[in-house]
Image (cartoon, rainbow, N blue to C red; front, side, top):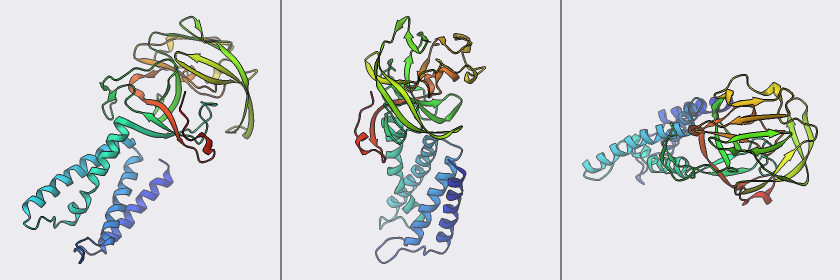
Amino acid sequence: MSTNLLYAAIAAIAVGFVMFLFSSKERGENGEWSSALQWGYLLIMVGIFGVLSFNMSFTAVLLVFVAFTGIIWIIHKFRLSRDPSHKDRGHFTDYMSGFFPIILFVFVLRTFVAEPFQIPSSSMRPGLVVGDFILVNKFAYGIRKPIINDVLVETGKIQRGDVVVFNYPEDTSVNYIKRAVGLPGDVVEYKNKVLSVNGQVMADKADGKETYTENTRQYGVMDIEANAYRENIGDHSFRVLKMAGQPSFIPQAVRASFPFRDNCEYAEDGSSFKCIVPKGHYFMMGDNRDNSEDSRYWGFVDDQLIVGKAFFIWMNFRDKSRIGKSIQ
């Protein structure tokens, strides 16, 4: 969450509090609380949600609100049962209790069923582009406990070639999306830009060229041309991009230390590397091989960092033709 959004959240709390102070605390003739009171409570809730989101994950904030509104809902139901007219005379519990079923539904949906994400970079071109809004299946790799992310009920495992969303190992508040090319125990080798797993070469076939515009930190907006190849991993067939003249990896960008770094061997000239994937971890690579910061540089992805399996593009405001495409 950006600092500007934090200020907006604080402003919402302030405006909501002012509206609350100057609003009527009595029901109107129609039996409803005043609009100013309702808007005041709503703005305060939105503001508090925003402030908490500054230092907490969205799931954690939802869990806090589920617990908070759940307690209010219980108090509200208790008051209704004790009042002869079956009304809650407290404006706070009467109004705020209505949020509980909505927040609970959103929490269950996002935590256990599906969650939307937006593609922020070109690392998964040509299959996924900047501006794609995707859906991620949250139960494809097991129903997981909120926050701690341990598998509660096993429903499936990551397969080679799956496109996976996960928490970035170096900053778990950030979500990454890459393709799983190595499973626990696999030997992953990338030599002269040819991928092999357990000694088996993942053959690729030339499939034209791709040109796209990239806003780079160093050079600003520029057009990039890359060769496209058709690659097959497991049950997945997809296109990858490789730029002529680029090494298998950039040696200077490889972290000096990351968990299980001793499992990897890097050629000094960047021509090849070989890694043995440790237990409970995965090796991830972007399809845009020369424009992706992935496991080549920062290491393996722990199973506890897995968010889910990307499966569907539901929106792209720049290119409507991409809407409805499945993710290969």
